[in-house]
Amino acid sequence: MSSTQTSDLIPVPSGQLNIADVSNESPEAVDCPVWFSLVVPTYNEGKNVEHLVAVLSHLLNEAVGDDYELIIVDDDSPDGTWKEALALTNAYPRLRVMRREHERGLSTAVIRGWQVARGEVLGVIDGDLQHPPETLVQLLKAMRDGADLAVASRHIEGGGVSDWSLIRRFLSRGAQLLGLVICPAVVGRVTDPMSGYFMVRRSAIANISLDPLGYKILLEVLGRGRIDHVAEVGYVFQKRQEGESKVTWRQYIDYIGHLVKLRSRGRISRFREQFPFARFFRFGVVGFSGVFVDIAVFYLLRFHLGLNIFRSTALSAEVAVINNFLWNDLWTFGDISRKQPGQRQRLLRFLKFNFICLMGIVLQGLIVSLGHDVFGINEVISKLLAIAIVTLWNFWVNLKLSWRVTQVK
Image (cartoon, rainbow, N blue to C red; front, side):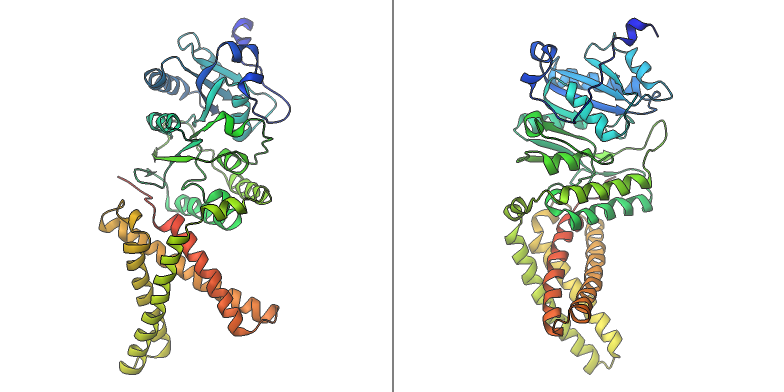
């Protein structure tokens, strides 16, 4: 590759990870602004890049005309992804390429791309074709309709995953559950906080010091940005066409560390403003009815049918869970359930509800034991405190995990 072609690469920004206002950008950004800038972070995606650029350029040409730019930020891939991309710039004049030789990491690659971007709206999409490009059209519409952040989600109607193993599904949901515990005010704002496919308005993150850890840049945008209106669009995560998956255990560890960092930023007031108190009240009423169902069934099984105390306790508890699920599915979360018709979806909701309630029982036991044995709190008070905490736990986790579409054909 000639030195002339190499000079066509975008210079890599250095210093702090801040996104400037367009007015503070380079003369090129002021003289040639665009409405939308899409960043594609890449590493060893040489086999995908030509097809990806062709598809994205076609879709964006139809959606926004010439009012966009496509920025590939490559971490000096051994397979020469940046060279493949740079060779396409003559055929695709809206394409720009950055080669990072001294930095690594998806999150920082995205931010470096946004730093040189000229758009009012900033976006990111993976370079491995697992994010369906067609979803861009819906995300762009959401931004035109006034959203500060538009997220492509696997966990709303129309969303799902294609070929994930049971282990990866479990890890993904477990990571989201852990996020709800560590940092609910951030993770709870969207159904798919681990999505790497979204758009954000520049003004929402301009002049803010970003400090991401790992590869979940959306967490950083949610945790530090000025995000008011969030829109979500369902998409199905696709099977990888070329190359190898870059998901490692290290990324899950970084995810937890990132949540802990964001936890200190104090989003309690926003969390309080957005908490669905009316829905929580209905959930509490249903839970209260379950207590009477539990006691009545226990009395019937134990004293009329003669079952032993263990079987009577277990069966009565499960009948109460079934009662609570049916009422919650019909009343508490009815508006969500009606968007998820079909017996299969109801069965999935029920199984998740059952599992979460089981975890709640274990959590309740731990809280009672901790309160009484460690802190010396009265047993009854410890029990009441545990019930209150577990009720909140069951409601919040079920809201975010049970009443969601998780899979489509």
